Image 1 (cartoon, one colour):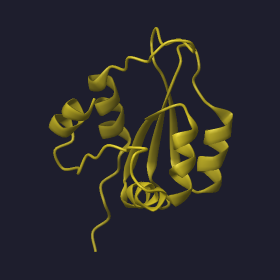
Image 2: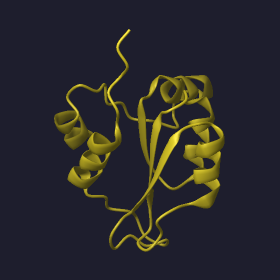
Image 3: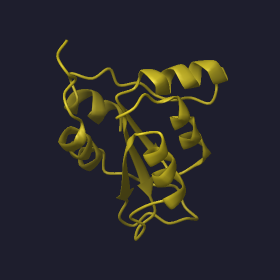
Amino acid sequence: LLLTARRGLVSCDVREHSEDVSFSSQLALFRDANAVIAPHGAGLSNMVACKPLTLVVECLVAGREINILYAVMAYKLRLRYIGHSVRQARQDAPMSVSADEVVRLVKTNLSPSPSP
């Protein structure tokens, strides 16, 4: 996903979130992001650090279109939330996401930065 995102979103600084860095570094990563792409999980709670209008794409198991917890959280924080149902993804197995599909989703929904 990272390589495809870097190729497909050339105007973006694509970074990877790692639980191996300090909590403050994780929050800084979310704070500086214009878009966050993540599988469903506790790591998305870091969206509390996102600035308003940040795009949040949550990858969900097949058949799930929205996660009400993170959708409401995003709404309250004035973020733009998209639940992305990943075909053939199951709750009890690793998730395999189509990188091209996610990049298209981000490109379609990421508005350009306002001019100063």
